[in-house]
Length: 276
Image (cartoon, rainbow, N blue to C red; front, top):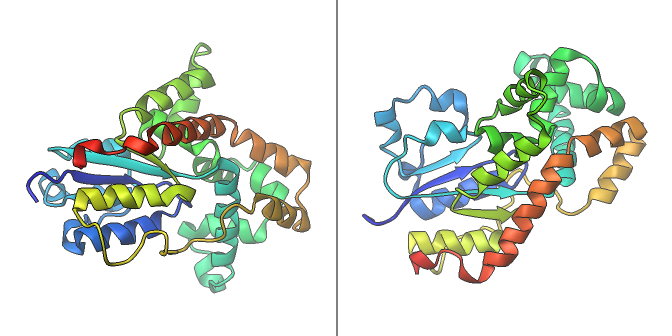
């Protein structure tokens, strides 16, 4: 439809993004969805190729999608930060346990191998520089760094900036992230996907029929069981060292999360009025 905006879904790991992607394919058709789901795939496409699609969904650098023209509906889905980290960790352990030893030892599977084989304290708080950088890029206040820098590797650049300039602090990162979040067309939480489904159906002009986003559970574990997962960490040998590290890795993201919850509460009644 001529006046339908291009859709850009900024998929943060372990926020029900696979289910959202499947719902986007259902609403807008597979041929409309860009096949690139990660940056390594997206950068192989020319700008001309990218502009052939109207829906973009994946673990993609926000900055790489600036070339998408015309009207756009850019959104993301977030999850309570501690819950996201724990879900990610146990998902990696579960997946790693299904792999053969040869596959588990492949370089691209180092994160899964570490989750399965390392003691919790070493995994979350190890000083191993190579592994630490890999893990922290996925765990350490990912929301704040991604939205401040608009790329998946933003943490390394922003940490480098903090080291080079003492006046550049966590407060600056949070200010950048929140300012950039305000540019998005909508924010959602994993437990209010009903609002996302409503908005996407309005855009697609598809009010009834077909699958429900709430009913999709692609690669999705349990939601809202932080205490149980904390107990599972303890049973795996986690000590105060692990829990202190998790608290440190969510300190900025909790500010972002509170901002998103306030946004959802304040906008629930008048979302996407321009599409009605």
